[in-house]
Amino acid sequence: MRVEEIKKARMGQLCLILDGKEFLLNAETVIAAGIAKGADLDEKSFRELCRRSDCDRAKSRAMWYVSRADHSEKALYDKLRRTFPPEAASYAVARLKELGLVDDRAYAKRLVVNLSEANVSDREIARKLFAKGVPRAIADEAIEELSPNPVAQIAELLKTKYRNRLQSEDGVRKTYAALIRKGFSYGDVKEALKGYSENLENSEEW
Image 1 (cartoon, helix red, strand yellow):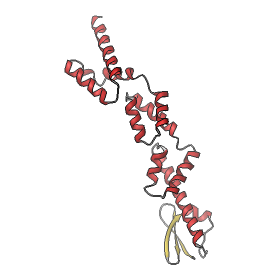
Image 2 (cartoon, one colour; image 1 turned 90 degrees about the vertical axis):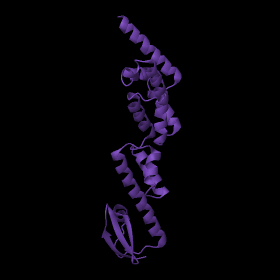
Image 3 (cartoon, helix red, strand yellow; image 1 turned 180 degrees about the vertical axis):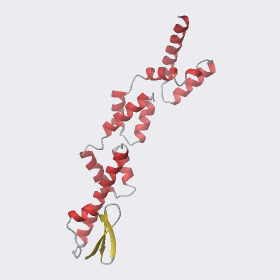
Image 4 (spheres, one colour; image 1 turned 90 degrees about the horizontal axis):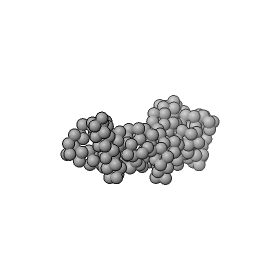
């Protein structure tokens, strides 16, 4: 296969024309391989060039993704697979892990802290972590290490989001049900509501 022409293409790619057919390859890959107009490539060499091009392009795309938002390893791999073959996607994720740009444990900890500060229950945090592709063991580890006392979380919600609902028996019942739906346990909700009522009674007596 003879390289008849090399033309600039979009987004860091070069268009190689081989035996009358056009192929878009990563520009850095082509340059690093020393490919020039007039070069002869056998089938094996060309397949290897395409493989390296896919890997390099996948790595570049992965770096763009993580520059815009945090990703778990699985989420990044799944996103890359929309465009690239499995080997290229795996290569890109592995390289970003080596560079410290993708770290499931660090990602899980950041997410747990952010969600905990918003008084999200441990159960709901776990659900969100799994949905983001974080492995169960890493999710459980981050939650156990960083998640605050659920009763304290519920107490904060009772003082803020649900405060106006607690003026009637029906409002208390609806609040109870809403907190259960958010993933808090029956026992924790009951304890927090009891504490809220006692604090309210004490403040009124005072």
